[in-house]
Length: 591
Ligand code: CAO
Image (cartoon, rainbow, N blue to C red):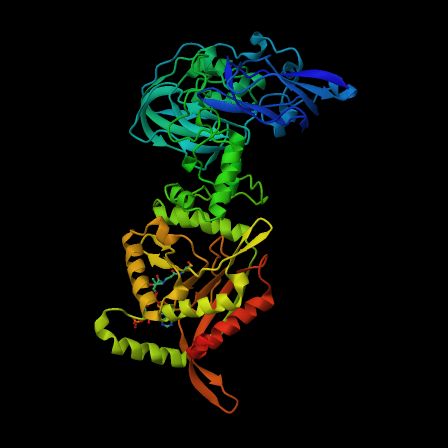
């Protein structure tokens, strides 16, 4: 065993950065390339990986410390042979760990004991600006070993007056995020990227008009570029930017990032400045984790240093949502929709990247922002679909007599103003079935089943802005007329967008009725943390064999989706059969 000091490797022209996250503690076993701490300037945050595998003996930094290249992060106890031969991937995160093979020896050396000299690490100064008057293309500069980074924030819009070196977008890999500044000043004529796009060095970001190329100095270096020399593509990139900063940039491109290199670290006296507007204060790995879970970071209040969102905050939020915490759901309401696997990593489920199609290639298109409700319900439905093992049983209920009764009731109560629809009977019948099969009136909490002794039934309501799910509380204690009345009121509030969080929370079981529209069967998505949902479609008269002849009967199609972690197929079939019996002869509800 030997003790090895793990140092901050060459982090380019970042002078001093702040430790904003400790990812390991004494006693932890770490692997080579595992992230140890997260550091941040005002423009970028990155994780510092370990150059060795071993056990953390002593942490040599604490939160809020300022560190720079060569600062000792921690002391690691490593096996003898390892101490002599560290992993080659000790470059900081911008040269992402997975790209370790492309990280040059200088970078890994710097991570061990001897930081690379500033002269070797820093890009050559780039000459003074050149003026340009026509449209100027702004491209992704040399961003070191980053590949396919995701645009997570767009900070400007067409028509904006842009200053040279003003940040245009924020990009993120799994280990670092950084802002990409403009290489020129001018008016933004066209933005060529949007949220969720993946970009690479040389990609066209924007077109400016009336531009002047940025003054470039060695201080504008990319954090990655100095740790990893510009890949060959950089010359292409610089060449493309050349209209903004021609000869001098091109000439230095082989060894230096172009004018538009990602923003440098802020001066040491403001190291923990608040993040750019709209960008949650969280490290790349936390953001990535949140994205995988569909957690809207903008809604989280960070408990970390200076309000930073930590891994625990994301986990806490997820647990609260799963437990039906209304406060959290209300927060979710304000969030933008999570980009559909935009990062293309498919991490977690290991999915293929989301297809990226330029639809306009095939015909005219129009883009519309998703309505607020759609964003909320979309995020929830996606989580539920992915996390719950759904099975769906279809069945039919003979509602001939019940429908006749319903029509008669409505005739008798015409003046009351309360219209009774089949849904009210379905709610009441569901309560009876939930009483008979208590596992359906339950929620999973870890390895415990929470059996509810109250009967709150939610119903999906279609509104112009999307789907909402109001709840009839204590449906077991209410009659059909009262349920119908409440349903009418809640449905109206839903359509007017006036439902309160309280009116949408506390449900035990949900019914999604498409009876007023049509269809036969469908597979509704369970409304977590409930364990089942009943979908019904439009009833229709069908020939039903009574043993002697076919009889015309009004049949109600029912689709019950259930969580197979809690419910078995036999129980689901019994539930549906019982529901069918009650609907066929509502007197049974009294038994
Ligand atoms: N079979 C046949 N007809 C039915 C029926 C059924 N199962 N259920 C309702 N109907 C009839 C009603 O009797 C009514 O007929 P009349 O206009 O002749 O009186 C008509 O369909 C319209 O009913 P309704 O939809 O206004 O009332 P409801 O109580 O059935 O439903 C509500 C209320 C708010 C649930 C409903 O309007 C709604 O929004 N449904 C859509 C739910 C949804 O989108 N689910 C999908 C979720 S998954 O994406």
